[in-house]
Image (cartoon, rainbow, N blue to C red; front, side, top):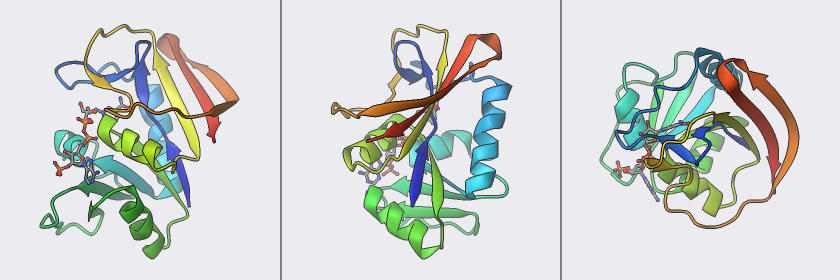
Amino acid sequence: MKIIWYPAVSLDGYIADDQGQSDWVTSDDAGMFDDLVQQSKAVIVGRKTFDQFKGELYPVTGATTYVITNNTKRASDDPAVVYVAGGALEVMRSLSADGRTQAVLSGGGEINGLFAAANLIDEAWVSVYPLILGSGTKLMGSYAGRLRLSFRQGYALPHGVVHNRYDVG
Ligand SMILES: NC(=O)c1ccc[n+]([C@@H]2O[C@H](COP(=O)([O-])OP(=O)(O)OC[C@H]3O[C@@H](n4cnc5c(N)ncnc54)[C@H](OP(=O)(O)O)[C@@H]3O)[C@@H](O)[C@H]2O)c1
């Protein structure tokens, strides 16, 4: 199973401002994210991110959205939405059981940290925005460990966004 982490982050390391907004994400970047999700057929999000964008971005049409929660009672009547109660390994089990070979890790911060701590991120596709937000949701939530990244490719996107791709580990 390959996990590709795709965050959009400010220069000072935030994925959302202190109002929980990331409305600075550009359409070019959102389009690249969607292309990767369509190719992977699976996207992983935390329950807070899913609830925030439910009916807009999520569930992503053409893919299955795996929503991580601690709430074992949460269930979906939409076959395109799978709630997984438990940590990152439970999500990996669920993806494998569904025959997936690749999934996009979207966030938010807590879920990013969960996958980093479990050493489950294979690639990082990171869009860096020319913004200093000062406060907000940290890229990795409360995770304070390290990740070793090997740079593969970088792209300059419109509006000063730099998109870098790394192998992790
Ligand atoms: N710019 C970007 O790339 C990007 C991408 C995605 C999201 N975001 C932003 O990130 C923010 C949300 O991030 P967040 O860190 O606050 O929340 P989050 O990661 O989206 O979701 C947190 C939730 O995940 C569940 N969870 C966390 N740890 C768990 C564990 N060990 N086991 C099982 N479930 C667990 C819990 O759900 P329950 O409460 O249901 O138990 C928790 O409340 C939003 O503002 C969103 O807009 C930005």
